[in-house]
Length: 95
Image 1 (cartoon, rainbow, N blue to C red):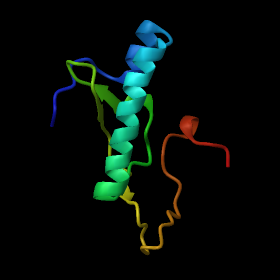
Image 2 (image 1 turned 180 degrees about the horizontal axis):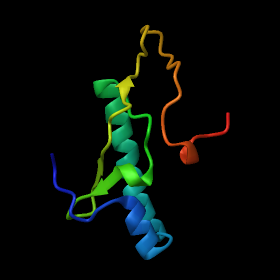
Image 3 (image 1 turned 30 degrees about the vertical axis):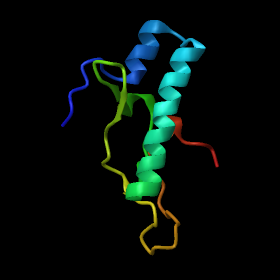
Image 4 (image 1 turned 90 degrees about the vertical axis):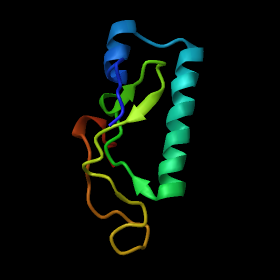
C-alpha cells in the first residue's frame, strides 16, 4: 500500500476552504486521468468515489482508496450494466 502522508482530499478542503483555480485544475486533471485509466485500461468501476476516498501523497498527487464496492466495468453479465446501487448515500445522485 502506498503512503499518503497528506491525508484525505476531504480534510484538505476543510482545512483550506475552496481551492484556487490552478489547485482545483491540478487535482481534477489527476482524477480524470485516474478514472480514464481505471475504466479504459483495467476495466474497473470504483462506485464510491468521494473526497474521503481520494488520498494525497507527499507531493499532493492523488491516490484512490476504498475499492470495496469496485466491480468490472463490463458488469456482471458483460453487458455494461451495473444493476445494483452502491456508494455513499450523501454523494449519490437522486435519480
